[in-house]
Length: 298
Ligand code: NAP
Image (cartoon, rainbow, N blue to C red; front, top):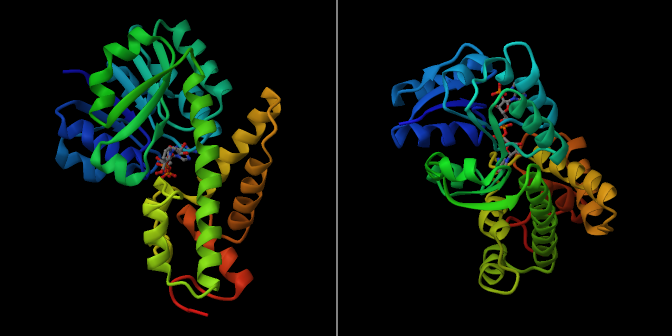
């Protein structure tokens, strides 16, 4: 059985690493806040002293980190992944980052005789916990196929997108839809609430009708129940929309809805809700209409 070096035990990484352990892989884990690894030790995880240590022990490295700067630091820094990487190791980065970062790391791994696949995921915290993530992958297809067992221990599906960076392009295009969709849901729920429609009845219509979506399923009830606990934070959503805005500039695509969605999440993060789930943005709409969805009917 392969040994995995798993780096980044946040909202997503912790349950992903737990699923690898439950499926019988040997896992060396590293996280900046080392105490987060404690709950994986009873499942058999071994704590690495650095990203380099985790990479040195591993046949396959998986990273799940917040953003481009963090990913580059964890790979390229002193005692980073690249410093410990052995020839022949397969590296999967599931963080959402720019295609440029993915291609840079692809080249750096190749220089060391290792392979790098950008393999961002869709599916939020619940899918990470249930092992039903979808991976969209860019890089060498044969490396991907040789390591399907690792990804399928954490997910239900892998879609090959193309050469290095293609997974990251797909992820940013995907999250453009998620960001716009989340705001569409919040705006529809705001209109219905202000019109005096019961929020739960309206959500039932949305989930069964033409406006049905994963966002409605994941966030609708959270909004009504004021549960802003984190599945996917507002600040990470904003990070993705900023990356997507950068991307459309480079590609020459006009996407006004993306820019509007980015601006709304900028507002939410500036208001101090960035560490909460992205659906906490509903508060901005509630402030504007002076009512709380699900509580007050007018
Ligand atoms: P998260 O909970 O914020 O976790 C971020 C991870 O990065 C933590 O392990 C954190 O370590 C680490 N980190 C942050 N800054 C660091 C630094 N300077 N040096 C070293 N490590 C650092 O994020 P998440 O929700 O798990 O998301 C991880 C990635 O997956 C992001 O790129 C996100 O966009 C993407 N994603 C998220 C979801 C979702 O629904 N949550 C879905 C798909 C994709 P500490 O524990 O020490 O803070």
